[in-house]
Amino acid sequence: MVRNPRLALVSGDAHPQLAEQVSRLIGTPVTPTSVSAFADGETRVRIEGPLEDADVYIVQPTSAPTSERLMTLALMADAARGAGAARITAVLPYFGYARQDVRKNLGEPRSAQLAARILCCAGIDRAVALELHNPALESAFEMPFVHVQADELTLPVVRGWAIDGLVIVSPDAGGIKRAQRYASALGATFAVVAKSRPAADAAVALQVLGNVRDRACLIVDDMVSTGNTLVAAAESLIRAGAREIHAHFVHAVMAPGALERICAGPLRRILTTDSVPNALDARVQVVPIAPLLASSIRHLSGQR
Image (cartoon, rainbow, N blue to C red):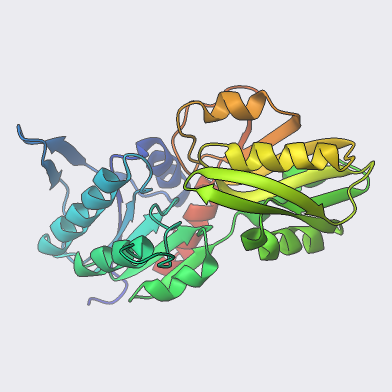
């Protein structure tokens, strides 16, 4: 590897607008790339700019269609390696396949670990990811890994709401550490909604653990897909006597019907980021994550 290699920014096909925003902040143009398909549907990638001896950063959330985005990222990494890149970093604003990280039943895969191995086999030297579904997944990556949290962008927004007596709520037991992190930063108490999950993408809220009566609650989660967990948690808080309910989730994955389902519920404010490209409306406050990704790239590349 050459010393202080030239920085090169490459955009996948998942979120080119985000890559352009990062490009403007770090002062490095996006390397021209084409992503298309052969007649039989196979993805075709061509990186059209020079990458020899470059420190390459590929921006590609593996959001829906997840398998296609993951494969495109792997192909782009292989193309960059073939073009002589000195180092390749995958910048993952959202890492798909992260929800199935353990084998709960016989015959199930560990999808998260497999997706990480695919990226490693593709020649990626390092990964940067925003808010993994489970922070323990860092160990699934057989490469240097940087786990970035959205707190520095989203916490100032929540503080700006100036809500008295705020309670931070985790919608399930898996999000307790995240709720505690937010509660500590905001000087708030926290609560948990205990739930059962009878099937994939289905959640049944059971009870609220913690005092929320006559309090303002902020549900925090890493992502929303169907919206079922979020709506069930909000309804449980209403039954427990909460005064008002707000929601913050980092990744607006949003399966069909999710936005309508969430907005039809009792939520007063909804806060998310643009880690995943989505057609959200004025009912949802969106925080840009490009400054966070740009800061990570500058730090890793040795820029000031």
